[in-house]
Length: 299
Image (cartoon, rainbow, N blue to C red; front, top):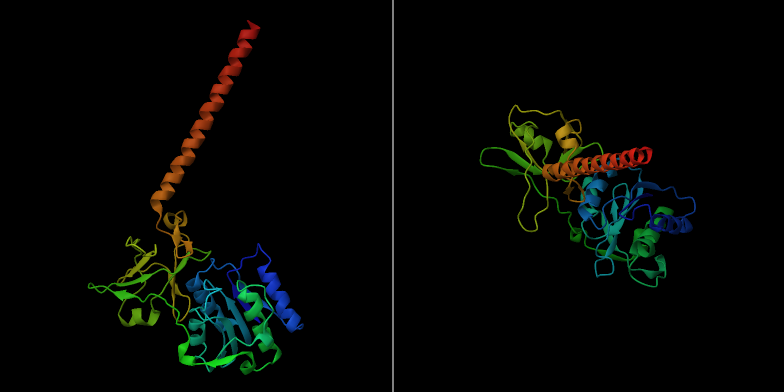
């Protein structure tokens, strides 16, 4: 069992789901992919899952990032060539399913015999999806878990496509910033090479349109390289972690750090210097007052 969620590690949610799965299948081995997806960030969860799924052992994948919990969105189990994926039908599973060759069968998890009796609908990960995933791992047929669904009806994962500008520049949105300050963009390496482009100059562009995400733009031009390397078949990783201008800048890309917030950084630096200066002045005043008192008493 491979398990990904946005539950975090502070609360008991992950441990409870582990307990539910182990209660159904006591000898189950569980791989925790990550539980630090930003709350309800389906796109971040889908991207993390598709990056990891090709390395996971055969079996069952349970993925829970579920902003629609408590609504009429369905929980599903998807059969692929080497196993099953279980999660909400909100686009979270679609990229990983596509990576694994597409769905063979999809079942809506609506059989109460393979669910926990729950007092409310707000913890479907524990009450519906975790038991279903564990039953699949124990050898139960996917058909037992619920009603068959149309494989073509799987909710797609929404990822912005790269664009080519009039001057031939390929522009892409940085989808996240990992802990090594790498900025994976969503253009295909092969497409860039066929167009005669190489990873190059990074231009910070903030889309200020209403509702647009604050994202860093990567623009690729000929013969302008910047220590890039391929991080996978679908994404390009551009290493900028050793560039101080970027390393010091933080903000928010979708659920992650944003490398283009230079002005807020400078304001923070000025505030730190101002605070230090005030403390030094106060310390000098205190010392002068103490010295004056000493001289007065001695005199």
